[in-house]
Image 1 (cartoon, one colour):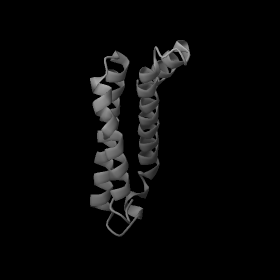
Image 2: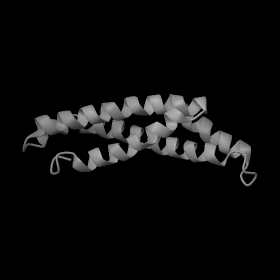
Image 3: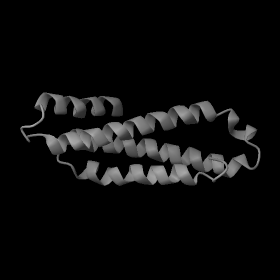
Image 4: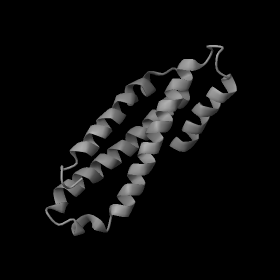
Length: 116
């Protein structure tokens, strides 16, 4: 992250943010809630990413102390995003008679549970 000033991470966050519109527009209330929590998590990741970029300089030891917590945060937000993507797909497949409705509902509820 220090080498590219967070460019790759920011690109991934933009890809994650692209899902927020679909989550907010969904008639499925669980997806709306997932989107709200995901947006909060992405903002936190961006804030930390910006802090690291601003304060790391050429000395990676400066931010080494918080690296563990940043990775935990980023991992949780990324997992939440992947759950959200699965939930969006599950909503699209509900009622298509090809996939078990209980399986798809389980995907939505598990994403909602993970979101908090």
